[in-house]
Length: 243
Image (cartoon, rainbow, N blue to C red; front, side, top):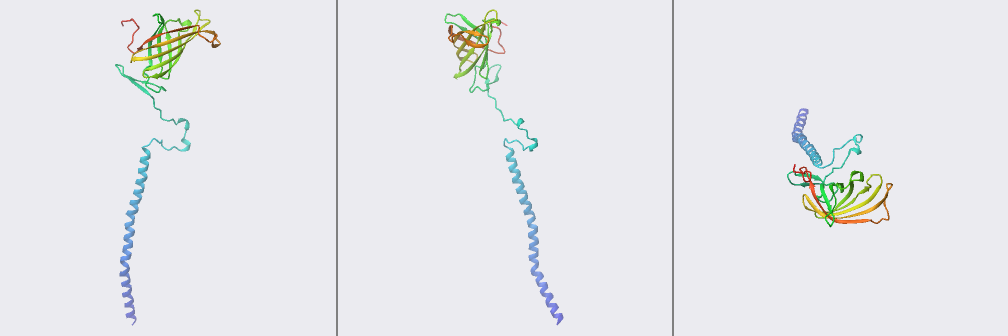
């Protein structure tokens, strides 16, 4: 009797073990199959993170700095410089600074001012700078009487420019102020190396060296005329020279 019961229990246990065996194997299989799936998920998340990092690296954002390494004084914005290409044998780029459009006037010029009767009012050399300023070295005035003067210019049309220029003249001794002068010009480039235009020169009596004020505020003389100029290049020579 006991033997029969033991055998019956043994049979049931064996059957139960057999019935449970697939479940146990399936659970083990699931555990095993989840491992590569988890690894794949980790790799995919990592790959997504790397992809995002790579995408961010294609922008202009600088690399992250620790707060202790940040120095705002060293952080500067990218700067673009405007330039104009001037063709020719000595082809080159010229900076135009804050000038909004192409400024073909920029450079050095040999100029001459002529009165309506053909008399030379002034001649010399002038430089028109890319920042809208200008300087002249006149050949008609001795250095002791002040032969350098300054101006500003603006572009007013295609190849067309206006100049507002202020000489300060001293007497022949170089000891006393003589005249304050305003020279205005409207010029146009006829080609890359030549310009023509008109000018108005107003002469005022300069009152003292302590002020730029002039007597009465009205010009004592006004001269108008025409202007011609030729660009000075690296290959230019002294006018009239054959070498």
